[in-house]
Image (cartoon, rainbow, N blue to C red; front, side):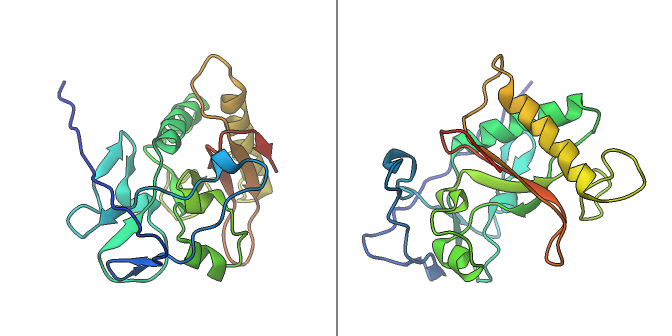
Length: 207
């Protein structure tokens, strides 16, 4: 079988700069008082163009899925860590083993520029600005919302709880290779459907 290798060359954000190629980045967070080594400012930003936006990064994920939702022209830039892709590919396998035939995940939020993260009111040191976090849901029927995972005929918090349990079991399995990180559950609101947050921050966190 043939394997295709896609190579990306990163771009440095100059000291004090708040944009790249006209793409607004904002002020990079200063870090964390206790876990400074886990909150280092991103070193490389990867350029996204109309020509490469659908490039496959791993077996089940493309570059487009991780882009920040802020409105802008091309080029855009994204921060993405390999540890997140390792985690997500493992989760695809876990979700399949649980009986849900996913080919990828529905995405709420991947990378966020510090500027966009501030504008939506999130905490400055959100893992999303470091490129190792994803908010996702299972959407096999491609209707844009969490599937009825427990098959009770309703789309509700029980489906979020079901996905959370699958993710927690996967992360707790010491036989696998799963980067340490956070898991959070979010129920449906007027702004979004239910989803699960995962990240590869390097330490355990649950909410």
